[in-house]
Length: 82
Image (spheres, one colour):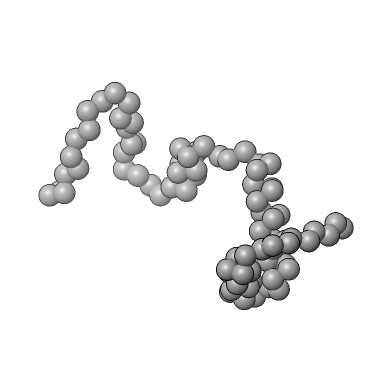
């Protein structure tokens, strides 16, 4: 395993890391490792397109009718009196 020394870190940043570590019940060193790990791995993993994420989140909720897209169409107000 590699070691990393960070010099000249602002006191405000250090205090924020300490608060975050306490909130997550980790040591400050483990908190920094977690932040670095998540950041680097997120760059390696392509982000799922927004439409796909929305579709996956709401899949299986049983909509009564499909949602049409507004590509070039005119938007209309939602009927709230039904």
